[in-house]
Length: 405
Image 1 (cartoon, one colour):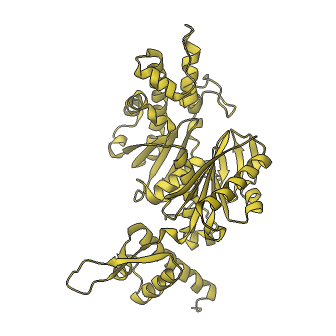
Image 2 (cartoon, one colour):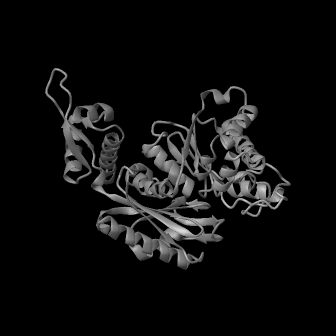
Image 3 (cartoon, helix red, strand yellow):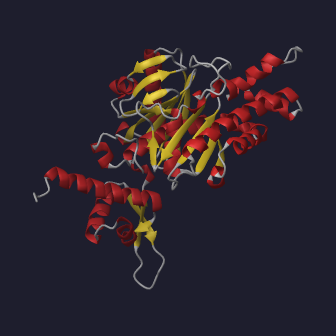
């Protein structure tokens, strides 16, 4: 048997370092003995790796363990300020941007309007917002590990190419390369719901869940999936287009160019259209979901009906996800969940009606409203996930999506 090559030894060393760093990130504060037991590495290897991580500022000492009959041990935990991420969420008319630490805690947040939809205009606005955010956060670009960008559409995270953006009408746009050419930092681009899902996987309710889905309801309807502890993105990054399940072949037109999509039937704009098309009495028409909720609170039967219809369609769509994938957790998120029981009760009813017998018994649901700041933090989470990604995944070209972190 031939001796291991230098490249093999370097990869093993990098894998061990990544293993220790992620153990400390997930379960710290921990003693070196606990790290040894969890990692199954030798004590010598753990001591060497933790010494390097301390020297480089990735971890810090945070006191001593409780006495257990022997010597107290020094505890280690992740140092959140070891690096920073900049997250950018692209919306139709503006950019929201957040600088976060390694725990995706917000350090700074800002918004900036966009003055058009052309790639040149939007890239220029992104670069301007990122530079301003770094300055306002009081950090240097050397401390920034990268820029994460989230937007609706079909995005290949590995290449940074936007295959299709329904809001901007972009096709095959190398967005990551265009931004990186101006800002000289690593740039990662993904579907915006995937970025939320990654952050939920790193630090949220999906932290220790093998299979879960994040569903967002708002201007659009989207989904991110973690399967076997890995973000599932599909071939060209198109997995999770939950909002474009066809639920009514003769239904209303969708922004995607098809008809009867869940998004066209149940998104926030769909709720508003439902009321506008059915109110002939000249009464004030809603302009936002908040207007619809206020009307429902005031006893408006049509507003309540619109939210109920939306909820029934979303519940029907969710039943398909349960029947196909049976995740153990579904996080229902997005701006649209602020409609509360007007929408949530019909969702639950439709789920019970359409899910296959017994499959709902082991599914937990969490309702988690999302605002602009959460979307921006989610995009920053894309950078954080890359920072803790296994070197083996990087060496293999990430053929199956972002690995367990």
